[in-house]
Image 1 (tube, rainbow, N blue to C red):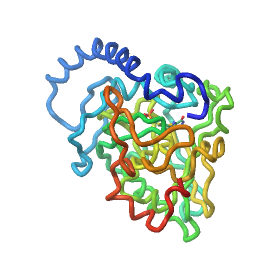
Image 2 (cartoon, protein in one colour):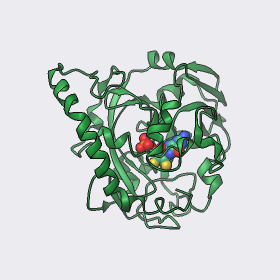
Image 3 (tube, rainbow, N blue to C red):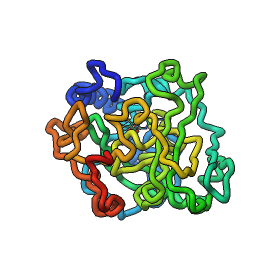
Length: 315
Ligand code: MTE
């Protein structure tokens, strides 16, 4: 995103060859899996790819007629700078991450601060599958069947005070397991933020898996944010802290390049990134580009959050 190297800016342009290679690799290894899958009864926890299966309900409100991006592509073309700045390193390097035990600290303007263990979070929330589009600021997109629960459910349990206007999220900062932290490409830990009404919007989820299984490490195991109407970098991975604040948090990307990455980061074809247009995107695996949709196609659910705001100014 920020670092200007040949594979960076035009990543949406060079994807096809890379995806082709990944697809070849994945197809070879998926033949056996397809055979195994046909033998399995149809149920909501299916070990299709080898990860630990999760129990979940399908939320038909967030189903789609669009083709889902394959598991192979979702897990081999990632942005996770803590494990390298190119798209292919996270799949390899993130395997070093210990994700059990895991806890999430809740602090700041809440009546019930504390440390939540992941097992307890999972016990307290009903998991559902939601298929969302993810649109990266670099002009590529995917369609991902996430497994998670509404962030609003967790927020309600924490009981924010009237001073809580924003929610700040932090990723784990563990240099011994995250080799990308050795490079100062961002001010670690990775930080993101939402306005509290954005965080409470029913579309915003904390995801703990995809394709029916626990979250692959390169996708942000064991728990990550997914905010489908914003550019992908808002969907912070491997979350260890959620803080409720009165002031707007400064995200890592805004700190690194404020003129390129604003607080809101809503997907908007009418607002160019200073270095490229956001009008078109390439769905990973597709040959032709498609038009980018305002709020990534979720305008009906979220446009009202920004009534009266100049979206060019609040980019
Ligand atoms: N979270 C952390 N901690 N570190 C990152 O580098 N990259 C972001 C976001 N969350 C990132 C992160 C970006 S730029 C994108 S596009 C999405 O994760 C990519 O998610 P995916 O790899 O699961 O597709």
